[in-house]
Image (cartoon, rainbow, N blue to C red; front, side, top):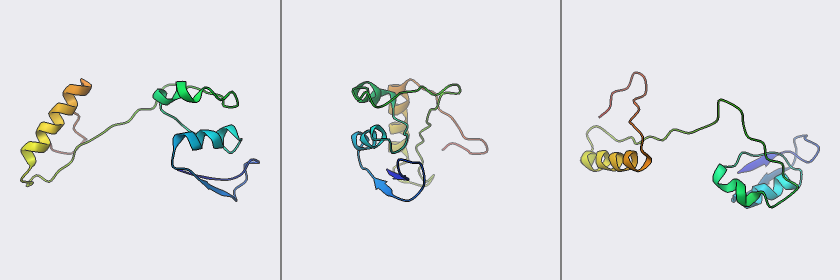
Length: 102
């Protein structure tokens, strides 16, 4: 993760971080803002210098995909993995517009 700027909001200093905790310390120190996953919010609320705001609708989300070559010799393995993931997340498959599954 990288943040470019300084406490006054002007570009200049470049900060880098490799952990969410470090990023949250940068935010607490007034060096910007960040998005964090809901699952991490309860732990990170311990710092009273940080204010949490929930994004309004549409709420952000993410899509995941499993891609492999149609000619892959492990096609059956990848398809089985995809089924396990879908069952574990209780989701149905999505096919991007204009794309064929398989």
